[in-house]
Image (cartoon, rainbow, N blue to C red; front, side):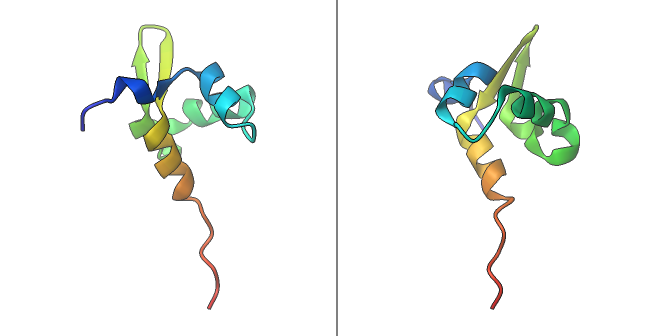
Length: 69
């Protein structure tokens, strides 16, 4: 899958766009990305971390609770 550069966000940019997130909580998700499934949305270049906004939304959606029938 190719990266769409327009969808990349820094931690601070994503937190600004998603007010339900705190910088601390997002950094915790990133730190644990290999175990929580977020790794596919993270791009690390040197000391910079970028989050693919579309992949992050898909990851978040995967945690939606299913209604009981």
